[in-house]
Amino acid sequence: MKIQFLGAAEGPNALNGATVAARLVNQDAVPADLEPVLAEGARRARFTGKAGQIFESFVDRGGKVVRVALAGLGEPSAKDRKSAIERAGAAVVAKYLTSGETALVLDVTGAGLSAEEAAGALLGAVLRSWRHDVYRTKLADDAKPSLAQIALVGAPDGTEAVWEIEQAIAQGVAFTRELVTEPANIIYPESFVERCKARMESSGLTIRVLDEKEMAELGMGSLLGVAQGSVKPARLLVMEWRGGEEGAKPVAFVGKGVCFDTGGISIKPAAGMEDMKWDMGGAGAVAGTMLALALRKARANIIGVCGLVENMPDGNAQRPGDVVTSLSGQTIEVINTDAEGRLVLCDALTWVQREYAPAKIVDLATLTGAIILSLSHEYAGLFSNNDDLAAALNAAGDASGERLWRMPMGPAYDKMIDSPIADMKNVGPRFGGSITAAQFLQRFIENDTPWAHLDIAGTVWTDKAGATWDKGATGFGVRLLDRFVRDTLEA
Image (cartoon, rainbow, N blue to C red; front, side, top):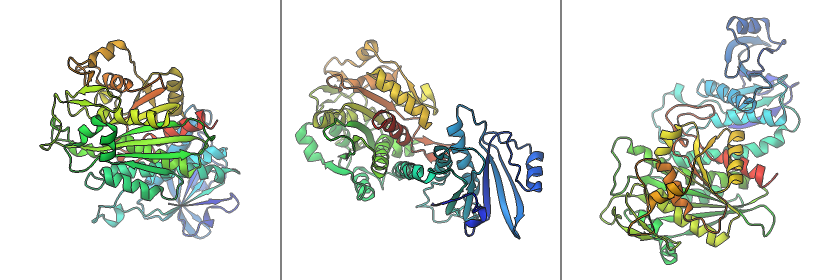
């Protein structure tokens, strides 16, 4: 999407080819300078500028018929003001993306927005414009995206500078959505790595890759146990960004990257198994976040690690009851091969601690269906051994709109994963599944390092359009982690 910035005096007609103009207005503050027919139409349609409201009409401007939309921003003092502004920009793009219009003016004149808020309206618009039509060869013309450029009019001074940062976030979200959306015959461990290398080539990120031989020599028996049933070899992808103080300990983001999950020998039901292409959503979020941080030159030291495998049920696959030895030296009785994400993450967590000694660790994983039963698709589950880290992540979730809900942990849950023949088993009893999964991961955190686990199984994919995304991949995690970095490492 091509983006332009125009002054209020230049007006909507300054964008060559624009035949649609959208004015963002506050609640009960419909602009007085609207054409009478437009103002009367809005009044008759009971448009008052409430958040989420849109009114459309056509007017004659200088002998040219212009399609005009009014989009409501809600009350200026509303607690969800930032979200409402993003939703307004997104709603306009959703309306006109496939309308046949090619250029849109987004007019914030008189709305009293700050530079950050005006850039937020543009961010919402750009995020909502993302689509993945690579494999759709027979789209009807009226279903194809036509909108190719947006001009922001009337924004305050400084908006362009803010947008330079926000557009990096938009690119990170788009990359995450791309990785999560691609089918498993396209994105598997090796191609995930190659896609990241190609996208990050000039970003300033340092990339390392461990192959199966290197991981075996290190002793990553837990991660490799998951991968042994697939013809696609596992990889450990490491992305390093050093934008902070030299010598300062980094923060580590670790992502579960199960590029396809059949469940292994504990095979899943056939119905809905196609969705398991997005079981690498945690790794996708880490990759998108690292790209965004690099593009905006974040003043922080961050390490991104993705454990990449496929979980397949061939004759070499691990069996229920097998015992594997993790990189940490702890042994694990594999009760259920469909509880594989934690087996991947535990070795990735141990490796990053030993290699980088990070100050804090945040892992992201589409880990359990249990978290969806608990929180539906509204929140991701947050588990942590550190109250300050948990509070910072919660605050980042509220600020970014990618919300978290802290879940309990404790010794009673930890006992549920004790094994009679190994140090632990990979699943507990039927109830509290997301909690016992987090307890499993906590056993691999060394030296009381502040750690948080985000179970994002309910938030990376959606069957219905949201405020700033269409059906499918949401890109969840990128904006959350970026905000966490801004508020805790760059503030």
